[in-house]
Amino acid sequence: MIPRVLTVAGSDSGGGAGIQADLKTMLALGVHGMSVITAVTAQNSLGVQGAWELPVEAVRAQYRSVVDDIGVQAVKTGMLASAELVEAVAELIGATDAPAVIDPVGVSKHGDSLLASSALESVRTKLLPVATVATPNLDEVAQLTGVHVESEEQLRQAAAAVLEYGPSWVLIKGGHLPGDAVDLLTDGAAEHWLRAPRHDNRHTHGTGCTLASAIASGLAKGLAVPEAVTAAKEYVTGAIEAGFALGGGIGPVDHGWRFRDGA
Ligand SMILES: Nc1ncnc2c1ncn2[C@@H]1O[C@H](COP(=O)(O)OP(=O)(O)O)[C@@H](O)[C@H]1O
Ligand SMILES: Cc1ncc(COP(=O)(O)OP(=O)(O)O)c(N)n1
Image (tube, rainbow, N blue to C red; front, side, top):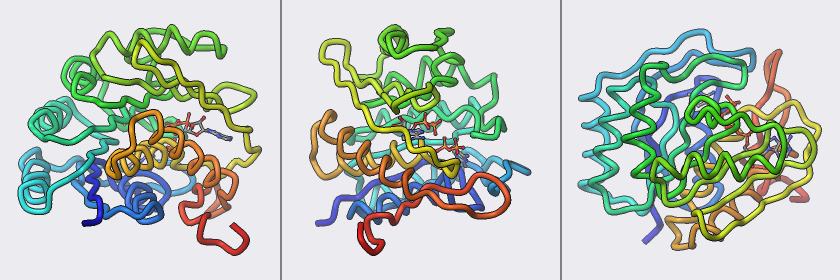
């Protein structure tokens, strides 16, 4: 049967990040994508113009509908908006027998907040402990741990600080550093450095969502964490290289890059 992956995340009306990015990634990677919507954003290439959370019962009901009938081989989380939603989702994932990729989404590329600051402690103490892989970017590392990364060498210190909260693995995304796009994956023992050339393309909306969904897709297919992350890094790198202009601001990565002529 086709591997099934569930994303628990917010909707991006512009289609570059959030649920829309997750489902496109899953389609491109050959798994069946399913969704639990946590919040709706009015969003485009210029930023987030509005955001509305769903009631916690609506989130729980969507999750139960999918997991109890269809079943999941991996779960991925994105925008969770509030402490109440973070805690409910952490409890649901903790009771589900499937690997979980936790993208602790805090702020969009344009600086719009997608998580209440009152939810940070719940992310640290409830959500990170149920993660098979946590995938913070450098702003999220700073928010969650107080570690400010300014160079590749400091990625190790960031990883150690996030691992303190209990995820099995952490992937620190160094995409916001200058130079090559270098990420560090570690479980505290093994270390895998993932390096890709930086593509000088401003159309990078949705990079983090795409990477986390690609990791979840790999895990659902039965790959081990290092192999799933390596394959996901290759996919997101291609999607960034092919990112295209839409609207007047930052366009999306191209989730369908492997289907284009010549790819
Ligand atoms: N310009 C770029 N060229 C190539 N890879 C990039 C670029 N920007 C980010 N990445 C990679 O994209 C992935 C997502 O990272 P990042 O953009 O830091 O996440 P987020 O969207 O959560 O801020 C990482 O693997 C990172 O190294
Ligand atoms: C609804 C929603 N969820 C998550 C994000 C952040 O997505 P990300 O992949 O980190 O992309 P950028 O916002 O950094 O471009 C979002 N914007 N909206």
